[in-house]
Length: 378
Image 1 (cartoon, rainbow, N blue to C red):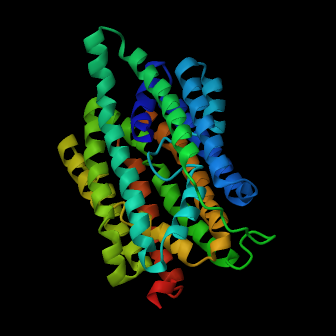
Image 2: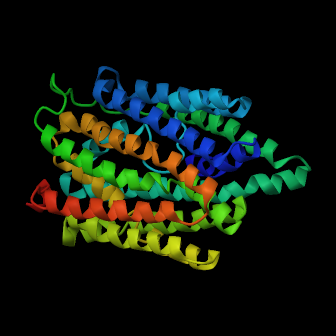
Image 3: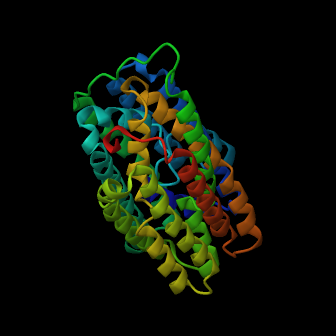
């Protein structure tokens, strides 16, 4: 659902007469809300069972969808975005993550941990790609039923609410293991490493915030006058390529190590992103965005596996939360800046800024963590 919503959201808001700046503001609200919710769950969630927390989140997801489907007033949508579960990135900004990332390592060994996270990320990326492809359906449905496309887009958010209810039923049936009880002080033994990683991940996320999927959709539409359906198809292609490239990450990590795998796959992706911004036509820009997708997500399972590897099991939920929350916060403000840029120019400044920040992150990560070795590499 996140893949579909992240593509439909900017078009839906623009149809209501909102400016690019207002679209960016709503995206910022959703990211800030996700940050607060993610931090609360990661640091305090051990007081509840994982099943109960997941059920609560799915209920909130349903209410978020209902709100966006029935309300058009900007400030009401802003508040709903801030307290709900809407994900404008089709990526790793989600209050579900601390629970899922802490639970997965309990099901496998250190040697297979990266493989499990790769499969997890691959499925998420592939489903997100399918959601992006489905973004063209509202246009076709509107033509077939002879109704406004805005009306059909509104129904997408009702579908998002139904998705929350379906997840509620599925989570209700699961028998999840209990998370290890953390020490009285969260991150007692791993605070230094987790803090350093959080700062570095924030630099990466700050860059990513300039090209978060909803804002990338807006840039492609304004720069090259592409339709939502065509952009959705492009995102399906890039998402699918990213999904299957993720499966190569564990093999690369076995040869290079987790940290070097993150860095040496991420830098080329940033170079392709900067190059796409400089292209004079849609064909070339799309070509470089597709090239970027071949390597841009290979660091995702490796990054998560690395964080889980260098902290004890009892601190994994807190570590997942603390490393993801700064990502949400850092990614929250750039959409505002992107919206302002796109209100004044369609040039790819957001992509260039994103690429430079991401390369800076990669270099700092390699310098600071090449000596912090996970158990399976010792």
